[in-house]
Length: 101
Image (cartoon, rainbow, N blue to C red; front, side):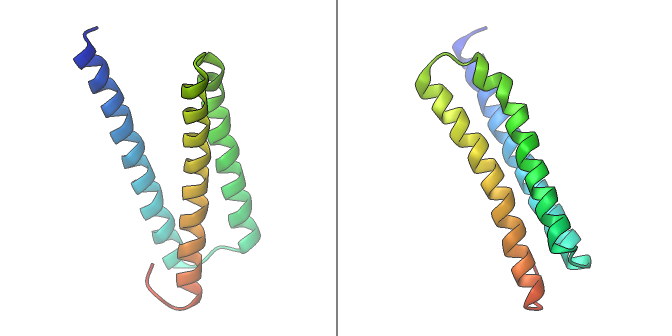
């Protein structure tokens, strides 16, 4: 595989992750606008999602030998979980204030 092809693969991965994040954000906003779920259920869902993301990245973490890359992968997984949690919190606050998410 040529270097340009490898770069394209990584760019495609980044675009895919960005797209998934946006779709997830929009879906959460839509769901909360329809009627905010109970706080505990929402918190359990976020915790489950964070755990699932962590589990999905575990094989990647294990496979990566370069400490700098491993640290980047760990930060990315943590940021994804934080982004989901922050988005849900923001939308929940807007819904409680009667604003449109």
